[in-house]
Image (cartoon, rainbow, N blue to C red; front, side, top):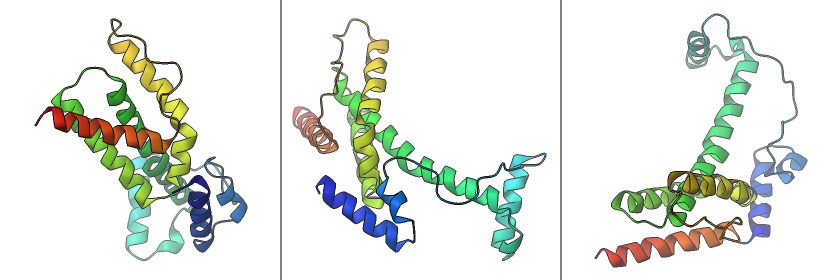
Length: 184
């Protein structure tokens, strides 16, 4: 799927969900949606405050829900389930590809990370935009982690070795195939 077709599909999905077109078109920037943003009050116990909101919804008393708290929870869920999960999977993949040593645990880790990344993009095509936008950031973090763990290894390149998300996925599949062939 090309960048333009991904963006067109995301635009179509966003509009069908009733999101403002200009907001959808601004992705992958994580911007505030139109509406009120007010400070939320958790009271004296955050856990009990959130459980109260859940109880109100589950008992059909949605008109009593604190709308600001619910909006905050949804905003957090969107950020955690989308971009953060995607970023973590990309970093896992990049780390295993950059790490010169091979072990059973790393072979499992790269396979799981590839599954997570594919599932994330399949479940939410808009995550492909976030992936492309955060490749450099993920690589910088991984590069530092590799250098931090073993100073005797040659330094990974300053620039990320993969030009796009597609190139990263292709390299990952190649590494899995190579590791499988070596250990058969």
